[in-house]
Image: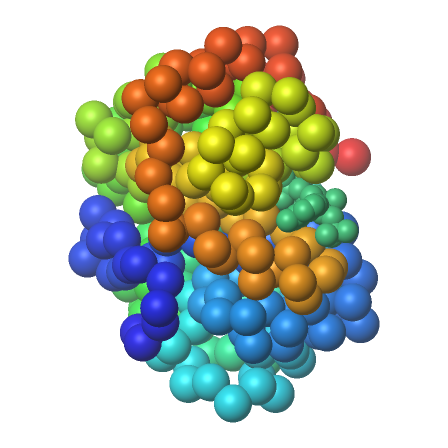
Length: 278
Ligand SMILES: NC(=O)c1ccc[n+]([C@@H]2O[C@H](COP(=O)([O-])OP(=O)(O)OC[C@H]3O[C@@H](n4cnc5c(N)ncnc54)[C@H](OP(=O)(O)O)[C@@H]3O)[C@@H](O)[C@H]2O)c1
């Protein structure tokens, strides 16, 4: 992959860009336009999901752009209603058709949905699809330690990625530490806290010290925690600015100040232990 964004190695040997582009809640036409603008800005990792209803727009944006398939990294996700062995195989075919691609780089189980108890079966189907060469890397999203352990115990295959809610005021340090131990790469969804942290005075002070924006400070914090942020923006100038988070360093004092914001009560999305997809 040729890109100016640093590349990180996954536990299966494949490489992933150190920052990606999120596409929720863009609809198909918005996603197609945003993906082209993000490609122009320099993004090479794209995050969509069957549930977002925009795989088709993301795929059209990607395949209509002058970029080699090997030079982009495409992630999509299995929705809850499709969990189970046969239904995962079927749902994956449908996602691939909407994306207009012959493989995806990363396929994730979107939520564990423990009450449904189908994530191990879904995982077995994904292992098969990976062996068939239709998925490069397989991973999960919103998985808690007990869900990760069960996949490993029952299949012997460790996820390459766990994509979790993670932002400076919801740092998830214990889970990120466990990922490191298990060799799982952390992807951070809502790395800007869905925008709510952009006006935070602590973040603003750090941004002023470095002559950077608050968004850049929040993204740099994710990077320094060893995770891959996937910020979403529908504005080309913000897409570009967000990528300029690699050219400065946060000091130990900055990290200490940001740590004061952290609380387990600051999640913006569902709790994976109880979350049920509607
Ligand atoms: N796996 C999961 O369960 C899960 C859950 C949620 C999200 N995700 C993924 O993670 C991606 C990112 O999360 P998110 O979209 O929830 O939140 P986010 O990236 O933390 O924040 C997005 C918000 O920040 C604004 N923004 C972005 N850059 C900005 C900048 N430089 N200056 C000012 N405002 C800026 C955007 O507005 P504009 O668009 O108007 O610029 C948007 O309102 C999603 O798109 C999706 O792909 C995954």
